[in-house]
Length: 58
Image 1 (tube, helix red, strand yellow):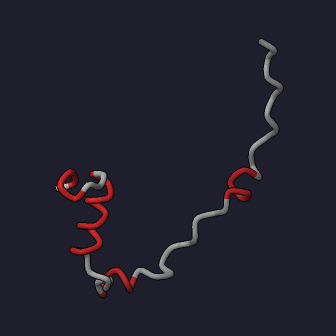
Image 2: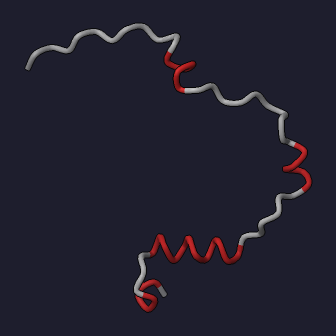
């Protein structure tokens, strides 16, 4: 199909998913909104790490 449409396989899969997936979330999924803490930012994750050591000269 991808070759016949002259597109990549990943583009074909993307098109098929967009065409066949529903835009609406299930009620059960909607109930989960806000039920867990947001993932920390990259700065928050790295703030607890120490400083890197200097690399060896090659």
